[in-house]
Length: 411
Image 1 (cartoon, one colour):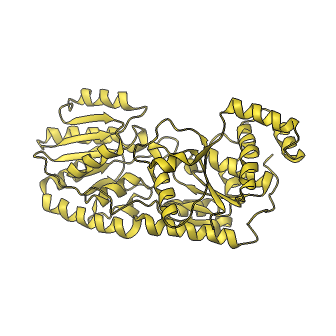
Image 2 (cartoon, helix red, strand yellow; image 1 turned 180 degrees about the horizontal axis):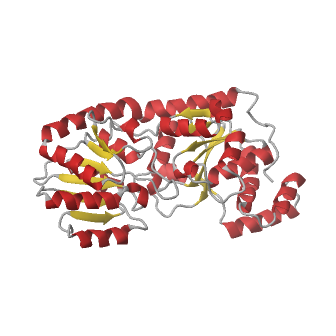
Image 3 (cartoon, helix red, strand yellow; image 1 turned 90 degrees about the vertical axis):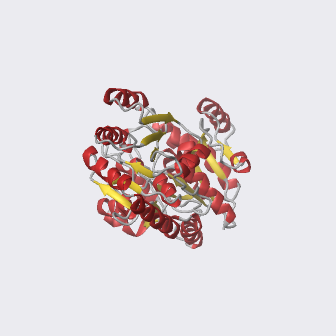
């Protein structure tokens, strides 16, 4: 059934480890789809298997791709409708997607690829959109968070992608419901498939440190809520609690967060460790007492939907403190596997952390319940099997399979 291919904007990427894990599991289940990436990543995770990374087909860099396209057009290797559409597009935004689609689509069709699956409703999905128009190669995509919630400046909108896609994967019930409310006419296309992970390979939290360890992992961006966590740590320090807090991850807000730590006088309690390889993350989780991710809504509406790192913390047997935002309540059962508070409320966040610091037995009970919940809901084997079933349905459906009947492009 591997007449489909994966298409990513960047692969493999340190900030999207769930993508290479999914491809790994897809291969373990007997599929061997071609892996295509529009751009080369600058942050290849060390944990990504070398044979997987070596199999990625990268598109030429933009300048080189432009030269190749000109040569191929001169030789008459592209049908006139494709040449015409690229020419008529002019200087409007998104022209690179047409060129990428023309080049990559021809090569995938030569390999017998009938369908492409992309992650994120972004560059890769829009390139796949044009491959459908040019070559009849159908496509689907997994929508995650801001790629759906924040509409980019692109002539091809989320609604256009949904209309042309064979199906759309939402990584949570929250995001599936969000799509259904905005585009009810396409509700049959929306399928919830959680991001999976290797639960059995997760580190086991031992919490042997003499001082309780609070850990948070993710990029230093607003939706991770690190400013609220730092404020909460300042509150806990004033109230006399013993703890250390490690924030793992780099990003644009790292300097301002360091300044906040200094301003609040919690430098001996809170450490920003910058980007860390997965092995270091695993060691930190194993030594942690509590995992905290204070998810927050950004001014433009951006938010985390289903933070994979929460699943990793649960799989490690850690109690989780987070916020009642997006799909987090689908992951963390309040009073069962952790504690949830309203977003952007440092006082309430501090109170929740304090409750677990005061009651190690409760923290242990939440952590063990979380480990069972993660195995039941987020294990890679069943989640990838669900995606495989959707791809198999596309392959067997003559209404959506190659060569297809693409609609007109957006004007």
